[in-house]
Image 1 (tube, one colour):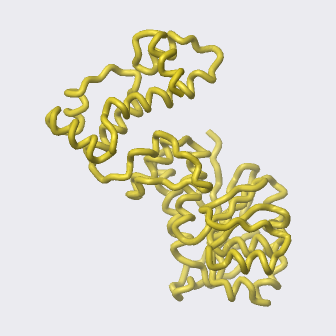
Image 2 (cartoon, helix red, strand yellow; image 1 turned 90 degrees about the vertical axis):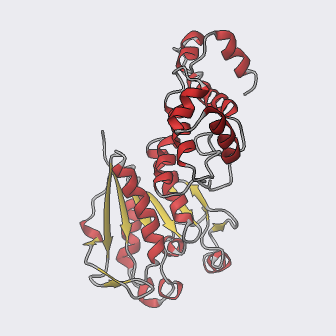
Image 3 (cartoon, rainbow, N blue to C red; image 1 turned 90 degrees about the horizontal axis):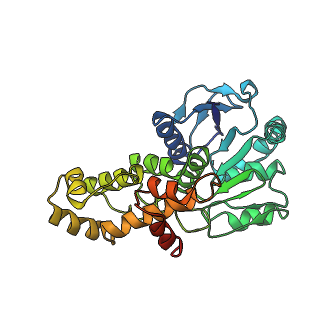
Length: 307
């Protein structure tokens, strides 16, 4: 399996949470088995965060090698520094960013990291966003940009920009879902105790991410089992055993925590599975039924009419 490199460009006066939130997402994804390599680089030998926390020495940016499909992420830093003559004079940094983009590296910014991309000219005539306090400033200083407000993140021609702070986590989870799949991204989000993953443009979420805005371990365990074993026959007592509850209590608690019944949730999982399998021309309706834990093609047809 090919490894995807995730590289963070550490700027002076970096906002620590912009870095740490996204970094932790990729670390957890790696722990779950994603073929990810995480690296860090800068153009300074001594770096402090915006709160003056010192960061140990990292690689010089020119030591980094990329291949197409790798990611380069620029966490936000203090805006006065980003707009200073000192930073703007770092021509080699902006040429390096443009070189990476020419190599089909996917460029990403978190919060005010968008200003670095804008200075390099990489946001010209592209849709982008940044922290809500800075959207007007970004548009005014770089009039060729197309700054979009009130969104968490947006992608335009291989460049992703996100809003402030925690939206970097949403962006990182979006990247993980692209590298793996939605359910994998959900597992990473759950590891970070983020049960409601937010979409960049508020698009409808996958069923794998819905009905998860609770912290009941037993219910989550059942939801995980259903998503991974929808092809298997299961009964309410079986699921209650997984949750370590009585059948009656499990039925009540599942509805209370998720807002829907366990039967309705199971049906939604089956529909999601059917939507994926129906796109495979070599699969028959009978095979799809078997993969979804159904007994007949008639059941598949009935569910398809509801999609």
